Image (cartoon, rainbow, N blue to C red; front, side, top):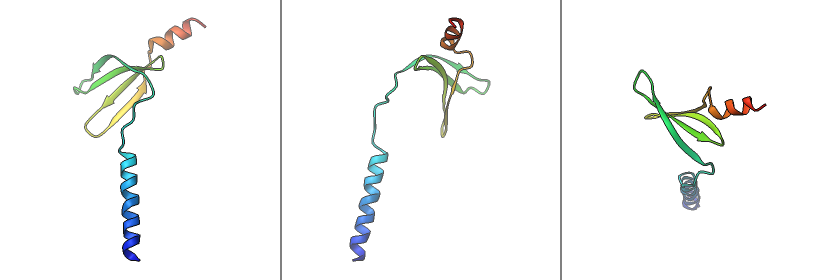
Length: 81
């Protein structure tokens, strides 16, 4: 009885790991345009997602993405209003 329970738990864990580690294609078109290097030598990439510019950073154990404050697409939309 205990063996069946252990096998069931192990099977569930393996299925969970397989599901979480599977690869999937991104559903947004991402276009790389340029990059910026800060004073510490970190490389920030400027990417386009859904007609907006974002600053993207990927380090050793961390990553981040933020809307670029002076996005050229947002400027164009504001000017046409």
